[in-house]
Image (cartoon, rainbow, N blue to C red):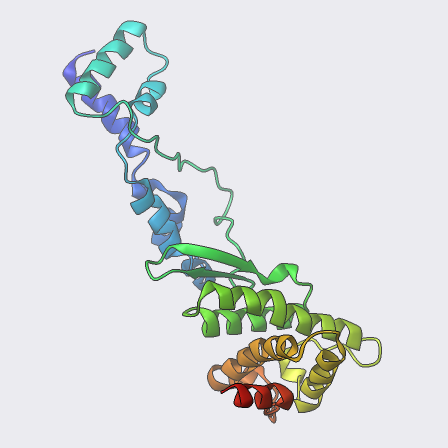
Length: 253
């Protein structure tokens, strides 16, 4: 293999890994991605560039030349060493994906991805697995992301695993004596008072019940401030529903 042929082959192989050839980028350039799909573009771009910026593994190039003779492959390997490509470089991901349509992305209205200060994904919360009514699941996911994006992981887990889950557990039991609630727009003060009374009946400490109420209430408060059309028009959040806990904190202070 002469030098011209070698460089032509290398150029052909490398071109298949160019960012512009990725199906996601092609759909972006063609204007075929929806607004919701575009929200995931920064994470896709990070995966395709920063996290995959190691040198090309010469085994990848040699594998693409697998139909050549041993003599030609030997020449290719010696040429790669001459170009400074390490034999121990990390193998690049293969982004050549066969798509029959737009990329398969999570439903961004139900899946909340929270990141650290550097933008790296820390945890993904899927509101689609909670069993909540579809409309309410989207409303909770929106409030969860909006209110908790800058909070600590401990607050994320407490809100998702305790506050929201106990609210949905209450709604499930409530269906035994009242109409099903499909969205937060149907939740008024009377329903919230029922929720508080239900929490008080559970065999838990007051502090635990207060924590579950507070974490859920913060989501409603966020919606009231930022998306008031998603909550009851006359919603009033109960003030200090667990006074015994407040008095105890005052004494300790």
